[in-house]
Length: 387
Image (cartoon, rainbow, N blue to C red; front, side, top):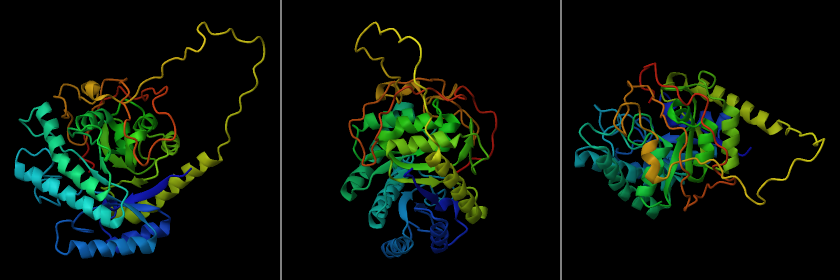
């Protein structure tokens, strides 16, 4: 197994950044998901270049890789969580988020980061679905231009309740932007459990060609609450095996943003859990198949005719069939804050993979993928929002 493990600084916000990096290095993490925020690396404060250089030096001392994350709750607006977004009705709001992401791209380049993470935001009231998708594409265009100049991939995350909340939404955006080679995907394994029609391991297989960043934690079906490993419902061995099979070489980052009060201990227990899972997968003996006995099977009726593989991942044209939530308008969530509503679709058409990312797949994606066992469940619990 060649997975490279990281831990998100949004789950270590009670620690100074230098201390957090030291703790993660001591625990054996390969890297860090660095959230740009006021308590660690403020992207809007003075003297940013000097502070970035200092962080780069500390990362080098500890031998840690990095992915830049932009999910800080109040870094732009002290009164609006995660606001403004790329979908804000006011141009000034969109411009502020665009500027933050362009800054994040430059920070990532200076740190030698694998990618820059981002999200779409919630569709504003009064904005139609098609108009919101157009806004998202227009807002991301200057960010992708900056990413192209810097040579740093952008990794957008399907986020429950946002306009782009599923893999289907990612493929819609990808098609809308002409398969831009630097538009990749942040796949959150918990979000797959929460609301995707496919099981998490199958989501990984389907997403393989576009993976630029991976976040991992436990979660329950229909409930958007990031949980420590073992507190949710995810079957992790198939997920980790699927990640390894894609050939993904970026960081797989533990994301527990509401557990900073116990951050060092959870970083330790998370590493112990993941190491145990990976060790078990490495040492698991392959199943042996006994030689066939009895008469040979009859020859197939059509020589050379192979069955068509099961399809996964939507084409842009089919994106409206997946990711819509009960009676809500497409692109919105009808659930209470902190809940997910499972999409009703259980099969989608396979997208083309015209641009394979640097962290591309070793194995063929899209063969025999079936929806997870809980794919029809809907949300019934409303905890506080998890991020």
